[in-house]
Image 1 (cartoon, rainbow, N blue to C red):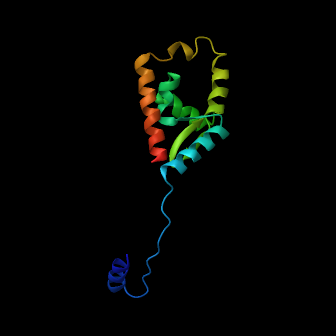
Image 2: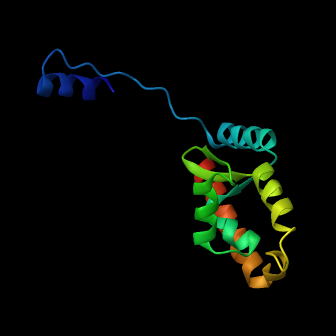
Image 3: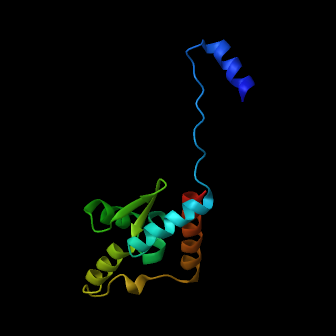
Length: 126
């Protein structure tokens, strides 16, 4: 590091100062933070996987987020929808005849949801 700093001082002048930034949190600390935030919000579902989980379209998820019916919590720059807002939406949606439950997933949709959830959690923790 000293050699690099000396080269940089030579290239950029004496007023250039190299500062050592603290290393980013490790994956374990990030995972613990994700768990803590999840517990505080009644669970978290990645916004990218929510359409698979609920059996609704991506556009409908976006509309519900924009209208404020789904509360979004960003964890390490990955958007998650809180479990308590999903519970509130489900309680209201059950009052509508037919409803979203009749469209809920086949095996492939559940697998796709699992992959999307794993991907989003991996992005947040990595």
